[in-house]
Length: 150
View 1 (tube, rainbow, N blue to C red):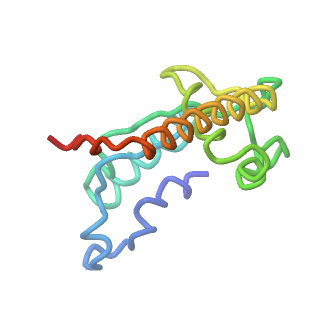
View 2 (cartoon, rainbow, N blue to C red):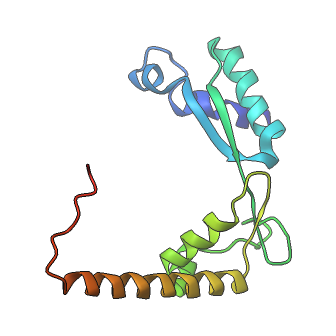
């Protein structure tokens, strides 16, 4: 498993003379789930310093994990993962975005279930209908549009 920690170095080329290495290493931030902090992130830091003498990133942003409706961690190897393209086709992109964003509070996991997606789709539909209603009302007025950039 140790070899996985040097991916950050090998992705941009171990030879420090390559333009990609000079441009992209070190980077400013690593975005990852909190569950692999000690298994993956710590190794990347240690091996990055060992092979290059530089810390590979300055900040780590830890985001929520997405779990199934029963609370299991989504995993391709376990077969508990969901296809985001299929969910977007079934529920709509706005509903998916709202569902994930509304549940992504710091320090909590996202429990993604069909009930939550249906609720997010209903909210997105109501919001869209209200937007369309207001939009058609504004089109029928003779008042000039307000300039919001000032």
